[in-house]
Image (cartoon, rainbow, N blue to C red):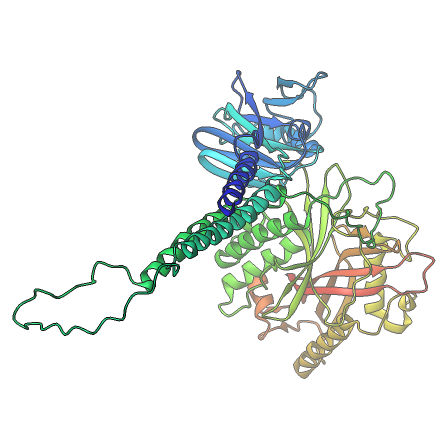
Length: 601
């Protein structure tokens, strides 16, 4: 009977395990769904709309095949359409019935955008390395890009901007093919197989016991021992048991017989261990509420993501580092503008004339501690970022701007953060902040008046009408300017006090301010201030000599003048300006200073 139950267990186990494996193999069905995009007319760009990518839920896998290099990038649909506004491209969308709508889009006519016209003059514009993309991919012959994009984003596929874009493109989605009973069937089948093995072993043991010695016959007479003489030289009469199995060998064979099904069961169990092979009986977890910042109604999308900002700053830092090494102002101008470029240009001139003149501090790119993008769909669009350098224990605050869809981001302001600086509360990068108008009346001071007010405080200290608007505690810029002026005045008075005069003045710089809103309706404001140092003679026919000022000598070409010298320093400054109803004062966040120009009066 034990053998009957063992066979029944084996049969049932085989059926259950087979059914479980079949669910995971032949009965499971396809694991993916693929849409093929076939393009007939050749164009240099292929734009796949987000609606096509989101026909089915889950992640998307883009495959493009062609000979040579293949490029793919993704970003907001509106941004990509703006970049393609001057080009002919193929657009892939969905029609009213949910099918693919493939059409060729011609360049927009009658645009008033001069940048678009300039970009259109450049044939075969390469999409590689544009700051507009959230991410990009490059491969040869076959490109495979895993994506997970919402409907408001699209994918751009191209070769090099001149050659036709790949015509063989597919989008693949994973299908939800869970088999919740495969795991239980395989496990139960394994348990039944183990039970069958156990019953089979019990049956064999029972049969062996039944075949044991029987004592029901007559008793045999006791026999006397017989001595058998064995000749050592003759092997006859020797009984060898070398062919008979020992108890150890028999036992080992039984164990081997029992181990084989166990190994088989273990292998089968591992085949059903994935999560989708089991029923999900647990309750759906309740999400834990977290603090969120809600974007104001009608606010536009942020200019960049945090990862995108870090990638852009890395490119800027690499280009500026090459420009610093070569003292190449034209190269620096590809990634710098405004006050930042003006300071770099002067530095290159001075380093070309003075061998030991200091190299500018490198641009910090990562890690980015703060990214505050402007929430704006048009151009120009800007980003304020804060980066830290663990080695030098320094931090930089920067403003970078993209003028149009075809331009690269350029740094216009860069400053070192004060060591004790506490930034105001800022919106997260995925929301962004609105730009504050230069003449906004809702701040303690409009952004276009901040530079003039702070310059007046530097010139007149406590006598300035704006003195009480600025926080004096922690403002190291005023301390540094006062100390530097006193040092230079003392040096001048040693030889020129009786024949000349030394005057200082501060005034707003030539570059426009920029401000982004903070959470409390204040603003981070970037401005530049010019510090002008005038040295003029007070005695007729007296020369003003600056033998130790190598910077002025290098720029003007002389170290003496009958009319005097004027030296201009440029300050790039970031402030936090609270809203008009706040009790806070305007706080200095960071600054940098450098020589800008020198001339003979």
